Amino acid sequence: MGNDERLIAFYRGEGHDHKGRRLKDIWELPSFWLEHTHDYIQWLFPIPEMGRFNAFAPLLTLDVQAVFAKDALLRQHQQRSLDVMLDFFGLEREDHTITAQPDLSIQTHIWLKAGGHNHLRITRMIHSLALCHAPELARAFQQAVIDIGTQQGIVSETSVQFWRDAV
Image (cartoon, rainbow, N blue to C red; front, side, top):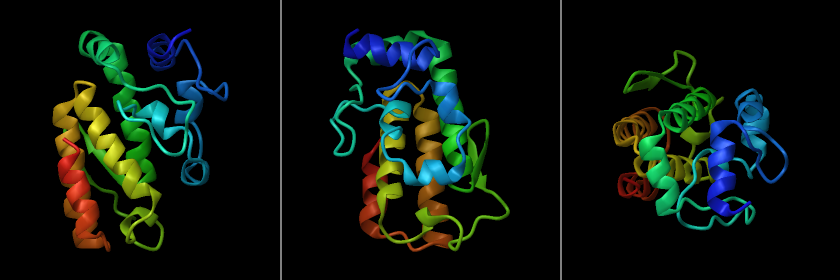
């Protein structure tokens, strides 16, 4: 199975990633796993560029982007992936509005600290949402992490600029 077919099958819930995990399996994993495992985010939020941490992840081609444009199920599944990651980050979504959960704090949500792999994940997520035909969600997530990150955390201007450039 080629790159495009693997990614589409994974996102439809019919296939699996390079370690045999299905999309729904990843959605059910605890926050500890999401924080300490680094080879799933490329599957949940594919982009055209090869990542540094997972050479087995498929790339988001123009053909796959076209499938996302036509297939509401793929977009719904990516929104569910976003909701899983928002919960992990201490955020929540209602339609296109993303806000902080009441218990969001720098002590328990590491993305609010300067640098780190979660800032890279956030950049990837914004970029992938925009490319996978969810530009409103990409912008809502982008604005939320910029606002919340700078007001309640220690987010560098470098990270903020990456997030701004991701759309």
